[in-house]
Length: 300
Ligand code: ADP
Image 1 (cartoon, rainbow, N blue to C red):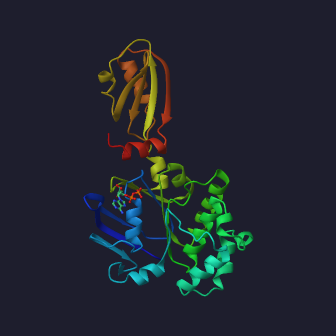
Image 2: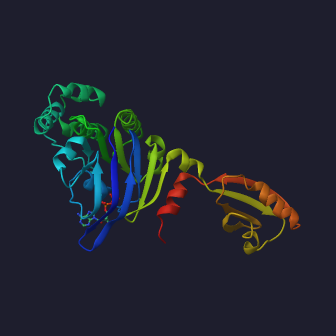
Image 3: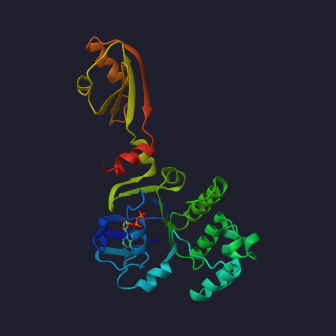
């Protein structure tokens, strides 16, 4: 089973720092989502992992091999689908894969297996320029797995796909993740929810969260919406334990954000009671992953 160890990785282009002290380790197969807004540094991280960019500061060690010492071996271990997915439009699908297999010195007998596993059998004799975006992505994925790498790095693999294509691509990735270690980048939270076991959130070149998906789902903040029978000062409500924010959303309605897993409605109820406040309505809503992502990556 492949492992990746990234330590204090820092990378700059001209005057811009794209990655700052990025560190993480992987320990098993499965799908790791690298989630971040555009420009966060995801592609830069991937190019460094694939040895397509030179490491400037910090280190990347894959299966005890430093990428700077043996980039050839690293390229054998990794399959890479770039965000651009460059293909030769005037080639046929099978012809293109044959060409890649020759370049990578892979036995061409694997092509049939890869065509089947990516659902491309029926398209094998089509010109690449005749294919839909969904099938083009599959060709890119087929090319990336042709040499049977242990690690797959997929840069925004689902961007631009329609809902059906999206579902097919997700399923392909989930299946591949049963045997391989997959790192995929996206700026869409739902993609992470649908496919990933673990999430690294990256913002302005820094890792701001590294959690298993179920932890991220579990650690949700909650909002308690409470309506009193008259106006209450926000500062007064801010005295409640674990409060992050109090917003007077409408009339005498307040949205109180808590950083706690326990249901805070009972706490609000007791607080109101002990301060002689009457409650007209009281309900709880969880903050979605989308909002968590926004909180972690917004810099305003
Ligand atoms: P993401 O993949 O998350 O969108 P990138 O790694 O592509 O982010 O970019 C991170 C930052 O580095 C951005 O500010 C981007 O403008 C900059 N950048 C990326 N590639 C280059 C390059 N070849 N030359 C100069 N700046 C770059």
